[in-house]
Length: 334
Image (tube, rainbow, N blue to C red; front, side, top):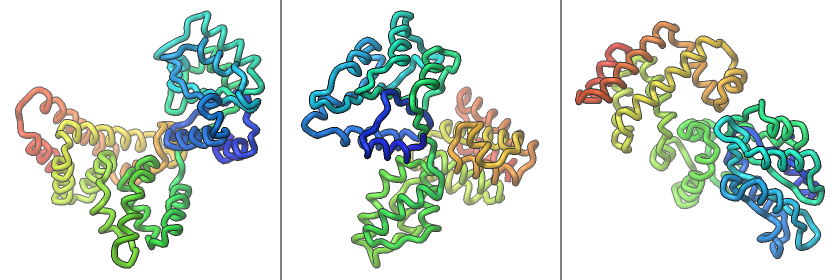
């Protein structure tokens, strides 16, 4: 079931007894949790809406909550957060597992139990995971694509009567690595500036002034500038990261991570969508990875990765100047 379908269920007050949240877009998950809470009469909300960390309360308490009658004969909603027992990192005791499996096979029809496993890597060998997949209504919170994010944000600017071109919006999205949470959280800065600024217009200069780029996005910018053989631009981005408080070893780790992604993209030769799905990364990152990987040979990408690995070792084991090490890397790769 898509989040859109789930939204209709909430609106029509026809929630199933078992709901299983999966996917990677935790910001959307929070929005829907708030929607669920607000769907309950305010007078009974404190009783009929429960969010609980199963590692603090335990399965017995969770099942007691979801089996308790609503105060106003409506639907009680219990959301289980942090279900580590569905992963390889943790497990339930046998007695708790049996209790949960029994409930999953015969849930309390008048209430709703929601297991929030967004951003969790599920162990599909476990009985509890198999049972949830079989019996619960799955809501898959996938990352929104560029078009969907564009529609959401453009609507906010339209309502505020502020002008912004699609190219500028895409620049804003890329600056924040298409992280929906950051895009929405930083939006008020742009709207406020647009309301009180000249001509109610947002352009790239305003984005640069108000929005600091994400570190992962800056790493992509570094690689892009390296590929374009623009050492001056590379050093400028590097120095901006240092000025923002990023440690040289952190910058090097980000570059290593991005080059590893480029090597994977080069090796797999998948389209953006399939690469995103296989590597569990945002579609935008997959798109950028394929674009940048296409500009280099596999050997060039591998050499860059090995050079960065050597720098990491030196940063950890010597007192050599980090900027000098980066400049040496730059001289070999531009």
